Image (cartoon, rainbow, N blue to C red; front, top):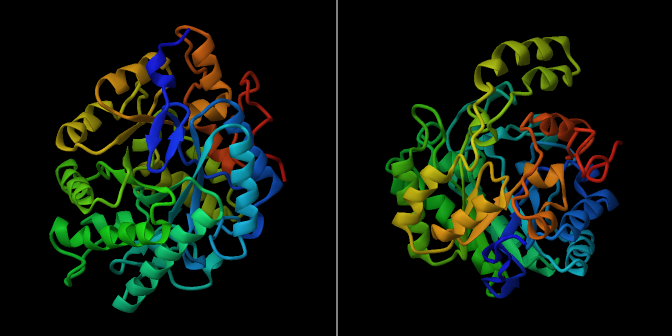
Amino acid sequence: MAPSKVFTPYRLGPFILRNRMVKSATFENLAPGGRVSDELIQFHGRIAEGGVGMTTVAYIAVEPGGRTYEDQLVIDSDSVNGLHRLTDAVHDQGANACAQIGHAGWFATPGVIKATPMGPSRTFSPRAMQRSRAATLEDLYRLLDAFERAGALAVDAGFDCVEVHLGHGYLLSQFLSPYTNQRRDAYGGSVIGRARFPREAVAAVRRGAGDRAAVTAKLNMFDGFRGGLTVHDAITVARLLESDDNLDAIQLTCGFTARTPMALLRGDSPVQELANLEDKASMRLAMKVFAGIFIRSERFEEAFLLPTARRFRRALTMPLMLLGGITKVETMEQAIDEGFDLVALGRALLFDPDFPKRCRQEAGHQSGCIHCNRCIVEMERTGAKCVLEDAPGFGQLGVTR
């Protein structure tokens, strides 16, 4: 039998998770037209059936202008019924459901949002191949309303938890990073100024969700390149969030999608396969030449974010979730022993949705994921799933459209 600590219940806000294992948000690409599909419901139902304490629906935009993909969920009154079907399916399997909400900022795709992307400051977006516009105060007030509305709608849709995305180079992360935030008003400058809008967004979500759900944040510990968010500043942000008392937990992450995506993934770079997905020859060439500079293979290590996460654990008293390369039940035990309240898993559950059950049943069980990151390519093509034919979850997660 696996050690018991991983499988002890845990109270997160008003709900009790059946164990300490959380499916982290991994974009599913299973929401055609931005609406909930049967395949998306089946995806999270299958993850829940495998035994996690909570599964997270990835990247739900708080407004249509915050999308990077056409087939990306937008939370509004029209999507609530479909999302409620999803949360019902998860609850039927004994797990809890979390909605990750956010806005892509200047990383949004112009052809999808039919507008010029917006960020803290004017920034050249390699995804858009154009410069973004700087958000006005009116934009920020509108977005705060959108975050508050998203928090309320998520609870109406049956979610037990709402995760606010403050990482990976999306809008709230763009405000935190000095690389993308060059504002000279109250929302820029020092780390306290750069943290102002993200803190206001978290407070807005809490107002919307009230005490009906847990509210968590996914926070970058570092961006991973010179001029980006540093660990020192990120700890300051985390302390500010803790003092605001609007969060039930923080999930610690890293990496900036437009610059250092492999900082979070680690393992093999799938850049050549991603380039081959491009329809235009010019974009394929650009991907192979330029993306290879930023999307380079990085050595995988078990629990590769743990050394940095320890600095946050020492600096904070609030609950923390450890993320990053967790493939063994012994690693989860170690994390809990070191004071981390929950562990977040991604690729291990794509490889095998029954990973939690196997960890409980088989002493010393370890995920068979080889960190090839080809699941990222498959996400772009057909939906999130492992592509290895010997994976227990092969063909069970995601669908070919």
